[in-house]
Every structure is written in structure tokens, then in C-alpha cells.
Length: 512
Image 1: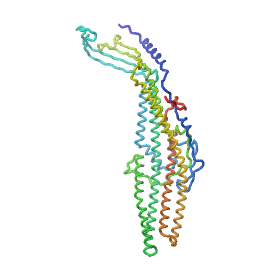
Image 2: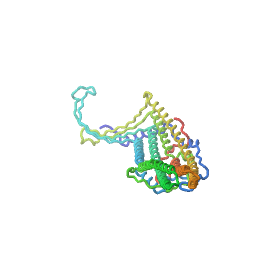
Image 3: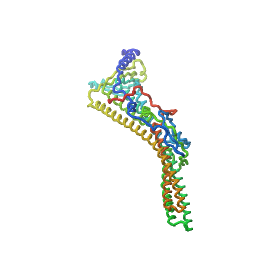
Image 4: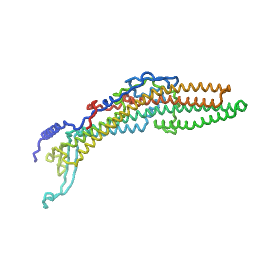
């Protein structure tokens, strides 16, 4: 009988080898990630107009003001005060294929992280088998019939293997995949924010187009009545036939613009149907008008240090940078030796009934080390490539941050200009209304020609439609502000928070 070491002795030897190897695993190679967010935020400013914006009477005319550091609700769209809009957004969030795709991507990345994390644990496998084979002495240089034999071989084996990862390659791979999970989460947040903003903007555009169509139809009705009246007056000899022709021409021009306007309305309805994942052929857009919406008066304004931690696109770019940083560490670790431990315990016998007898036991313990000596420069080239990829991601991150601050600055300026524009449009509408009333009075008194009336009517009609557009723009740019500030996803009751990482600091990363 072979002299086997006792089972406690065998495992004690294995444990000693494991502990000795683990003592080497205190070094994780490569650069530790440092978030550049705060340092970059210090390079920019966010400044809003002081005091209230201009205000006028009527829908969308109230003054707006900014409050530094004010909270942003995740359901900011409710500030528009429209249950119809709220229902459309809920429908879009429930049914959007793009959101489902993003959610599936998050689950995929999470499962891949689980798979990568499992590589840090030992592998334990159970195997068994039975074979019948014939052998001879050729492998040992003996061409003798006495070495010829036919036999059965039965085997069971429990095998343990463990990669010790003394230089942190596995840790860096896990970091990279964890960053991919956070990246997918932020893409999902960005998709949700964009979807909500698109529904708000499309709904506002739909309401504005309905108002424009209603105003144009009212203008057509007035011009039609006026043309009929002039026709009657021409029959009575009180007006010239040329005035009748001019009135009919103006009516025809106004009617000619209605089909294009109605087409824009239909296209907008179809776009809204796509956003809420409804069949455009059967989708019934809500009969919404701009007067059914409330313009939020108190607007939030985030500090630069908050903005870089709120916007999903900035957070996604940071996670890509984190993943690139981990890849540098992974490529660095692969320049160094790898160490693994193996152990197996099983039985081996020529007869099945002897498989579990003491004499059939077999075992092994082993440790393997692999040191890269020559790979044709591949490993160092891979490390340099990873460093270059980090530099590219860092440049993209800076560009994303810059683009975010530019967008915020544009929106802040637009909100102030929108209020001024609406005030100017309101004054223009009032002035053209008074001018039209005066010209009509003069025409009836014979002090003005009908061309003067037509010109005054055209200016008034254009002022009326332009005011509708100015109101629409105030709503659109208000929604754009919430989009630019990140949309308040962090204040949602149930949010997919990005895991905090203790190795992140406020310092900007140095090039690897």
C-alpha cells in the first residue's frame, strides 16, 4: 500500500501554500483612478440672469426666476401642470422600446460583472468516467507481448484550482466591468431623460400647432365673411370691384397655407405616437392648447460641482474613463508572472466495485507560476495601446463636460431672451391690433384704401401667429433647462444608483 499523507496533513500543506502565495498579492499594479470631475468643474461658471424675467398677461407670460442650488425633482415635467402631459410621459416610459433595450443592456453588463467577479474565487469541478483500453510497451521502448494488456479504467476526481492574481489583474478586470455596468446605468438614465424631454417638447409643439391652426382657421372665417361683405357692397356700388378681388386674393393666400400647417400637425401627432409607442394610424392626440400648460415660475440652477455629478452623459463619460484606467492596470499586470494553485482528490481503479476502496484513492497538490519572457513585444504594445485609449477617453470626457456647460449657458440665455421676445411679440400684437382697428375705421370713412386694410390685417395676423411661437419657445426652453441640468434622476424614489468607489478622489488623473 502506498504511504499517503493524512488528510489533515495534506490540507494543511495546501493552506500553507495558499497563505504564502496570498502574501504576495498585496500589490495591484497600474494607476488608481481619480475622478477629474471637480477639477474640471472649477474651470467653468454657471451664471443666470438676476431677478425676474420679463412678464406679460396671457398664457406662458408669467415671470421666471432662478434659485441657486434648488432641488430638481425627478418628475419635473409635472410643473407644467398638465395631467394629459403626465399621462403621455407615463405611457412613453412604460412602452418605449429604446428604454427596454437600455434596461436589457444594464442587465447584460451586470451579469458580465458577475461572471468576471466569479473568476476571483477558486474553481471546483467534479468529474468521473469509465474507459476500456488496450496498451503495449511501445511508449516505454519495450516491444514485448508481456506488456500488451486490455483493461478497464474507472475514475472519479474532485479538482480545485485557484489563480492567486498576485499583481491585481483580476481586480483591474473587475473594475473595468464594474465601470461598464455604471456606464450602462447612466446611458439608461440619459435615455429616460431624453425621452421625457422629447415628449414634453413634442406635446408643446403639438399644442402650439393646434393653436396656430385654430388661429388660421379663425382668420380664414373672418376674411371669408369680409370678402362676402365686400361682394355685397360692390353689387350695391359702394366699393370698387378691385377691393373685392384683393379680399378674395388674401383669403385664397391664407387658405393655401392651411394644408401645410395641418400636415405639420399630423407629423407632430405621428412623432408623439412613436414616443409613446402607439400606432400612428389609430393614435388620438390629446386636444391640448398652450393655455392648458403652466409655465414654471421658479427655476433651479445647479453649481458647476453639482452639474458634473448630475448629468448622465458626463457620468457615462467618466465611467468610460474609469474602464480605460482599469485596462491600463490590467495590461500592466500582464507584464508580470501569474501564479495558480491546484489540488485534486479522487479514486482510480480497474474494477467498478473497487472504485471506493482505500487503495483506489489518488490525490495531487501543485503550484504553477508562469512568467512572460518573450512575446514579441505584444504585452508592452498592449500596455501602450491601453494608455493611448485612456488619453482618448480623457479628451472625450473633457469635451463632454465642456459641451454640458455650453448647453446650460445657451439655455440660461435663451430663457431670458424668450421672456423678452414674448414681451416684444405681445407689444407688437397690441400695436398691430390698434393699427388694424384704426385703418378699418379710416377705410370706412374713405380716408384709407383697401390696400392699407390688407396690409394692416397681414401684419396683425403675423403678429398673432408669432406670439404663439414665442409662447411655445418659452415652454421648450424651460424643458431644455431641466434636461441640461440632468433631470433630477437622483431624486427619484427608486433609483439605480451608481455604486460609490472608495478609490476615487477629487484630483484629476495623471496620464498613465
